[in-house]
Image 1 (tube, rainbow, N blue to C red):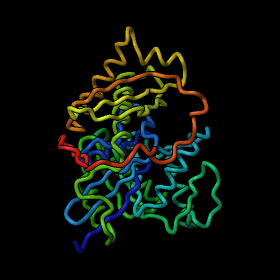
Image 2: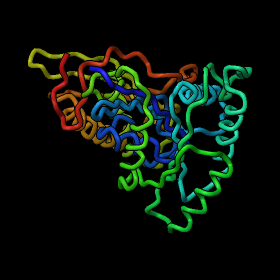
Image 3: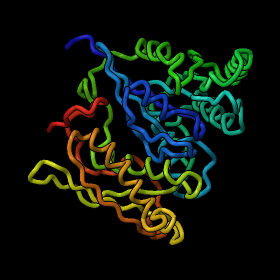
Length: 330
């Protein structure tokens, strides 16, 4: 088909700014984990929205902050790499927090990149520098506008645009959807003439096995509330299609300390059973198949605490993921 347009859009901001919520709302599917805990997204997640002849490829990045540990420096470097490789970058700012030191740090990096593109700067471990031919267009999205007065919004927008000149500014609520259609329409108008990267009905590029582990991780975080740090990892151990076409899925929940194992298991195994039941129900809708989910909790060895860069290779994406529970075909 001629006249197709396609582009990549990096969603950046501080932890818990609403990046995953915004992407999920636009694509119409929960491709990225959303919980009450900050820094839930631990690697790049792509969400795809195809409307008419335009395909938007969103890159949901981990929240940007000053990284100290090697694992965090690798994650933040990967997030900035996604920015420099995109056509546009949308900076999400939580209106309740305003211009925090973290936002100023992000704006400083973006300003420096405009003055001297990353390709021509020396890359340092944990820095935002990465190979790029150009700097993407910058878009401002002030989020959670349903929680403040309009005068606050206008003052914050004016302050942010003085610090960095954005191509466009939008006031949105990713949670309720207010202002999101206007942002999406503008993004569609800016996409370059380019062939689509994905089939029109595909909503994410996550392999099914990785998507399944993210479902379990989400329900673990939601169930455990403040009892466990967010650095909880779920790995796929086995994925087998049975003769009756049901799926047998084995996963391992890895925690950092032996004391955390008991928290995940809960009294007489009640917590792990609740996590499994919630994840199993969502996976049945997602995969349109009967699912037999088996969970095990292990203490993660210290040497597993390595930088997270990109999506682990859990096999190819099988067919299209549909938000209404449609079939997943080969």
